[in-house]
Amino acid sequence: MIRTFLAIELPTSILKRLKEVQQELKTCQADVRWVDPNSIHLTLKFLGNIEEKQMESIVKTVEKSVQRTPFFSLKVQGMGGFPDGRNPRVLWIGLEEKGALLSTLQNQLEKELEKIGFKPEDRPFHPHLTLGRVKSNRGKACLVEKMGKYKGECFGEFEVERVILFKSELRPSGPIYTPLKEIRLGGSREKGSGV
Image 1 (cartoon, rainbow, N blue to C red):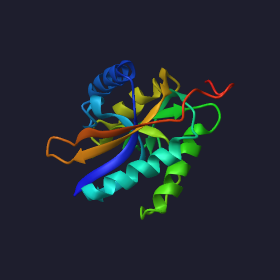
Image 2 (image 1 turned 30 degrees about the vertical axis):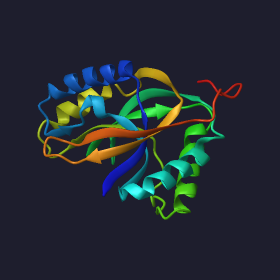
Image 3 (image 1 turned 90 degrees about the vertical axis):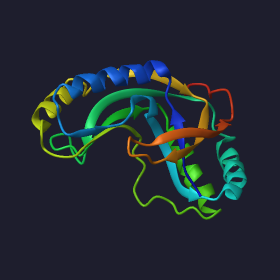
Image 4 (image 1 turned 60 degrees about the horizontal axis):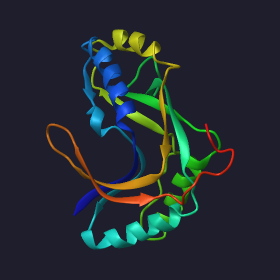
């Protein structure tokens, strides 16, 4: 069985900036399990454990879902926490787009993958990048204060051209993500869909 998910990769320039932000937040010495900056990505759909023989039908389904989606831009902007910014359990970086191509793409993937047996998410899609998970209250006040500095910051912008099927291996040191298949979106961007 292979543990898998579909995601959008971020360019190294943005990952580098997010690593710098993490380094500053770490000065609080808060009790946070930080996500490896090189592993930060935008999850579109968690598929769970699949058999290798399912891979072909998943890839075909995803190809069908994305063929009509043109390339689009995403802006990596803002920082907050779930369930709320004053008492965060998950630290996140926000994503913004003009139009609704990201939401449409994710919704299309949900619908098409449901046809081949993958249960749709019961929570609404809130695009975000996870920076870390807070494990206790130690250093939390400092953390919340430092997060405020990044609330409206733009960390960069990038063009989404493909969706990637990743394998996730859970290790004590943290998960290892390996790209299994890149699935390209339908092509040139629509007029007026830029950010």
